[in-house]
Length: 144
Image (cartoon, rainbow, N blue to C red):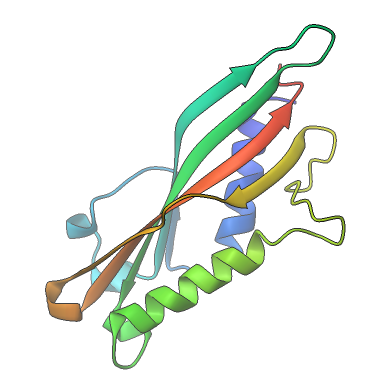
């Protein structure tokens, strides 16, 4: 198993959370996304922290981020309404199972995956579009 398997599993889960018009693993500034391409989800890799203790496998904390773009056209009134629906869909998709863990379908590799930290929300274009940056924490072991 490798990092790519983890990031691909996260992307598959997030992409399947709702009917995104655009889903990519690269960042496009909101100004480069047309209204017809929203709602959009973009996943980027950011930091990793590695912790190694004698006699234990290394623990990797991976911190990708999701960019969500929504428009008033997706909500019938306010872009923030559409954005709230996207945030709820992502939250539900990453909800832990009965064992209180979200392993992204990789139980031998991912110890947990969750939304963690400050979700940044920006309303732009006079309320016509909204953007959210969602921090994710993935705890993994045995990365090759």
